[in-house]
Image (cartoon, rainbow, N blue to C red):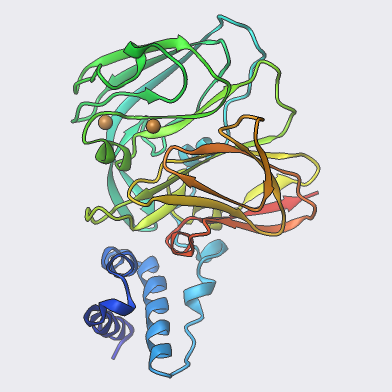
Length: 347
Ligand code: CU
Ligand code: CU
């Protein structure tokens, strides 16, 4: 039998034994990947290995594991629009009343969410997550929103603002526009997302992004990154098939993030994953300070944080060593379906 035939046989055997292999895992590891090229090979290799192990044949399928790193990671090609999401706009000094303007346009876009896997997304400005919005506390934030999508949308910001700026009642129809305007507060790590109903659909289709409000007293200089934890349900069954940071699965496994050991790495982190109750961020080889909601009232020193949907915070890492260090969801299933990457720490 050729490789695909063997894999399909394994899949069928497992289909009959649901107790050993959850429905979600089956769907996640096989069905959406049948058309996914190299990624299908990875998942099949793993399935095959599990099956032969079960049958006391301890053959190894090494590509099932080695394929997750560097050139072998089943990521999309390098994309400047995705790279732009990793680095926030610079912080500005505290100047109450200063105008900060952004333009967000809702568009229906087909996104490549893993190598060869396409998804009919709803986006702000063509990516899921949308652009990073940043303001300093007491800036007057003005966001011009236009809906060029096929469904009614809004922007709901987390933070403190008037009721008529909350993105819940002022639904913007296709072809419509709305301007959100309010003083940015409180300082910390926030997020924004669409609040049209059904809410879970408008979120999991891709309408969300990071929203940073800088404190009046500037944070110390750092290498600043943004990580929005998200996922995609590519077969429409209400469960995720791919997990990611800032959009495409395996992106930072294929293209590690280069940072310097001599300066703090600051990550603005938010979890917007739909369907799954929790997500997490785990760092290898070091510990970090975690500021819940980007505030300084509670600081934790750890290598793993767990976040429900809408939870967010700031991570600060002072790397002790140079070298390649992995970061990933500590739900290992999420990591294997795309939510993993590497830091290249240099002097
Ligand atoms: Cu929407
Ligand atoms: Cu929310």
